[in-house]
Length: 338
Image (tube, rainbow, N blue to C red; front, side, top):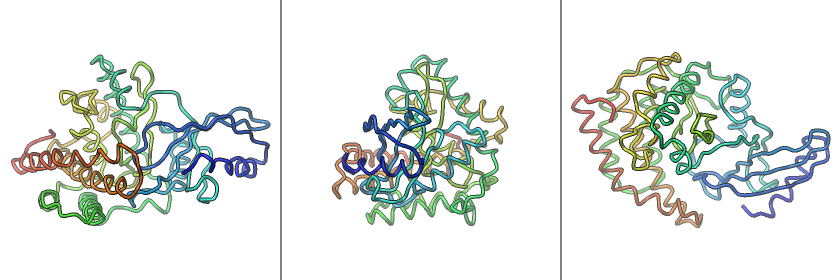
């Protein structure tokens, strides 16, 4: 997407808002491994200054997840129910506006980049408080009746089997021989835990998609493109995976907090009690999922999307395969969350 594409955004906004619009700032924001993100500030006649975030499809993609218009519709529903999400503004699927489908949401102040979030929660009590608050936020999400949106389809036949099938789909899309990952998926299919009640899940809850204030206090959950219906343990397992700890393995929740604090906040806010072995199963599946995504990110880089993060992500594959083997062996011994 080119900077000049934003020239068409102003007339589009004028038409949608039925008011004069002046573009005051367009600035790319860091992060966004799948999509591209900008800060956009506009002046609108009659309503003043609007500080927004524009999120648009990347030059290439993973081929999974919600589109920007669908994500906007979900944000509308979640924001109306009081969940901690950015306030939606507008969305469009005409690539002639900025070069790709996009959504606009109101910018929230805070920190989301992993290095800054981890610095803000370096003090253990702050990290524990964030883990507990995040557990409460996920419990509220999982207890919220899913909105009636056509793209939210229940997982078939079970959340676990549907998630394994999605991982197989990612590996098929990568079109690469990955025997360790295939073996891990086969073992996961054989060891699937009892199904939980299906609920609305974020699908990508992790350090990098959390917004906190300067003191590490929880503000909001960002980036809902992988949201859907599934097991609540999918969110908890993904969040507590080793790959999102950024080397702080003594703090299994995103590198900032303990599992005990997360589950305390989760269960005290009404989330169902978490079985340790079932959580380990979802941690293991999350490891395989991230390995498959790493392969696809590398292919996006090779296809011409010159983002350094995309090029470096596949280098984690050997470590992810080793972790998948370790977790499957732990699972077969009946162990709990790692």
